[in-house]
Length: 337
Image (cartoon, rainbow, N blue to C red; front, side, top):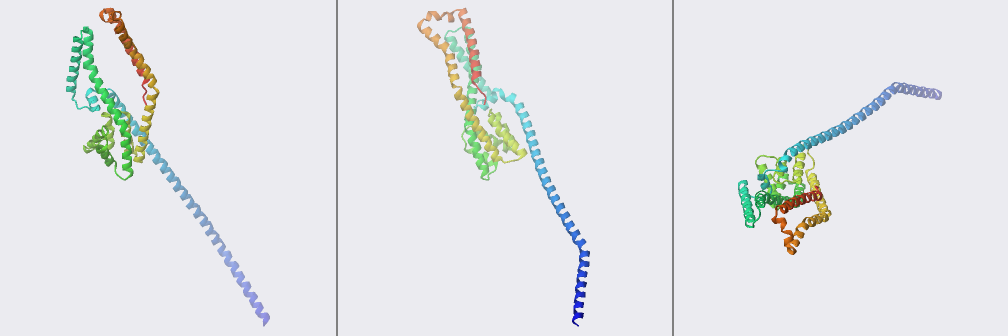
């Protein structure tokens, strides 16, 4: 009985082992196929992830290329506009020059003032007993030279005052944008609070915007009343930002830093050329000083230059050569930054 139980246990164990072997044989292929399918799924998922990364990278590169092309096209278009306006604004009519100088004088009144100035100088030369040629020269200088020089002087003075305050105005706009205010509010803040002439120029931008122009287009027109490169930079920055996008506060901050660097460079160039300017001033004034001293010590020696035709011819030729030398020295001393 004990032998029969052992035999039955052995047979049951062998039967179970055989059933397990048969089940493993049938399930092995299925398990192997599932592992292969899982590996293929992982491979496909990794490939899809790689394709997504590559596509995202390609999209970023295409977007950067598109923005570069947009900026390039914008710069090219703005350069063409600047060239078109350059010939007109480099030597504008007297009406534009008066406007750029900030003078409230009409062209008609300016010509009346010019004629009166020329007449007064000619009358003073005639009363002094100068020759007819000198009197005519005084008339031309008074009518055409002095009034235009006065306008150019006030124009340059206004541009200098604008450049001294313009970087501070840009910094205020940058702070306004960083604090959450729109660009229009920053420009209105400058138009109301900044000193002249920055206040007037930004007021023109606000007025142009109320008439229907966009802020970039209105800023580009600033060079018509403020003939300096820095005003053109401001309009170009706003135009590029409006077309290509980007961080406006950072762009205006960089522009403010560039303007301050340009100002420092101009001051450095002026300091380095001061010695040459002093030498030129001494050389230019030396003939007049010598002539005055000779007249005080020996008037009969120098008077033939003013009383004879040969002396007048010598004075005329000397004045022309001296003018040419002064202009050459002025050209050598002035540097565009």
